[in-house]
Amino acid sequence: MNQLPFSTLPLHPDLLHNLVSIGYESMTPIQAESLPHMLAGKDLIAQGKTGSGKTAAFGLGLLSRLDAGRSQVQALVLCPTRELADQVANELRKLARRLANIKVLTLCGGMPLRAQIASLEHGAHIIVGTPGRIEDHLGRGTLKLDRLSVLVLDEADRMLEMGFQSALDVIIAQTPRARQTLLFSATFPAQIQSIAGRIMRDPVQVRVESTH
Ligand code: ADP
Ligand code: MG
Image (cartoon, rainbow, N blue to C red; front, side):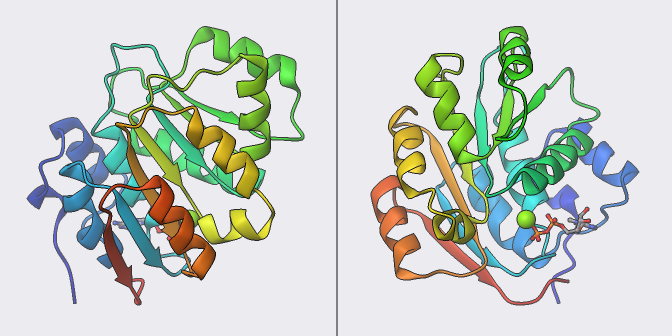
């Protein structure tokens, strides 16, 4: 089994120290398979079961590309539900703890818009949210994605099942073409293949069965 330590990757020393302090000693299989490609800037499609460590996989990938000195939205993670978005945001904050001033903001439906708009005015590096509310902010002009460098679709199969296809299309159309796109999904139905073909550039595909 794969038991590679994170230190075999070209990660920032502060990220490596933090992984030790939060008790992540070695990479899970999906992290070991996907991180080298993400760190090389490749688009990636990753399929793995629940609990396989997908959040830290894309989290370390996107944190490695951020410029903390630039107060602009540089990464967007789209999730199917508010609960999942909160979990992802918490994991990203935990991973970023030792990095200087990385701001992670969640934007989900069912939460007051005014507070979200006020938070956006203060600036954020990473947005985690549900497609409907992100589309809403884009329509109002309260969120801009023109400086985005990484787009993550987490649980892409569930987002499509929930009817978010058109919101995803609107959102993706407002991101730069030169972005890195990372797509995570438990299953890989034809609809995902089709969206991947439209929005990704020469993606690497990884598939991991086991969780540990
Ligand atoms: P998934 O999105 O694939 O369902 P998560 O990203 O939610 O899985 O991770 C599942 C659990 O595994 C979380 O509690 C997370 O903190 C933990 N975890 C992730 N990566 C590691 C690692 N390398 N070492 C130890 N625990 C990890
Ligand atoms: Mg997950």
